[in-house]
Length: 353
Image 1 (spheres, one colour):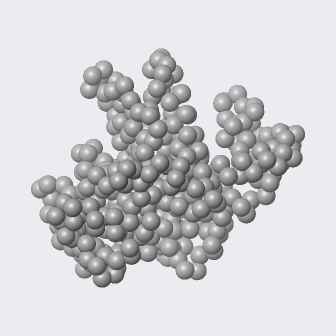
Image 2 (cartoon, rainbow, N blue to C red):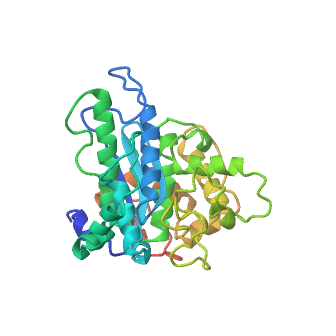
Image 3 (tube, helix red, strand yellow):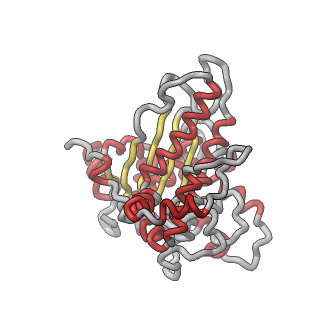
């Protein structure tokens, strides 16, 4: 069956989670050292991270995690039309004018919009409605990422033309098993690509940002993991969605002191940040040849709850990219692909499909 068109799957009016990949063209390196020219582009990683953090403060979209590789970018995003619906008309106009300012400061940053500029959007109901919808549209997030980085990179390279290899690719994630597997796949990408040997050295990933914050906040004895992720102490990862879902969370994620950095404080996995990082560490050891490891006693239950065996989990993370031919990802789809390959590692009991 042919792959569904992105427009048939993505709907900015619904809460959806997508794994998106954007890849460079013309043999260009997004980051790292180009073996052909010998030029190092590591500084572009910071460009991308800064852009993603900026977009997280503007859009009604949660960034769950990300990874910047040598010639491509991974990002896992959750649209939040429920959040953008709660914004006032003026708030929508102000955020849009931060994305596309009519004036800029001397340093190139968006200038504070004038009331007349805000009114020009607020008083045009059709234009206002369009801007509101775009602010929860993942395609617009990816567009705003690609345009900025392409312009900066082409200016630096003194060239014109395409920087990205066509449009980005996306896959919808429909259940917790798929979200967990995709997040692990993205966070472990530098290790699988032999760019890093551990989570602590996997620069420019969501996992590394969270680890840096945990290290910096070792004296947080009065806060639980759940509270700490929503506090103002997370300087590196505070613009991304917290890991742990909590039934007591406000439907819109609450303010939590983070409203200026991210759309909401809503989590996306049924495990704490500590358990997630331990699962990543164990999984990374299994995927890198020559490194041993045993399943920690606390990991098996979460895998069972999501309908996965330990061996199947590793295979899923290792081969997650091969499932990209599907427009959507669910446990049922992953089981179908596994059966086709003859790898019967998904357990029926507890499946979320």
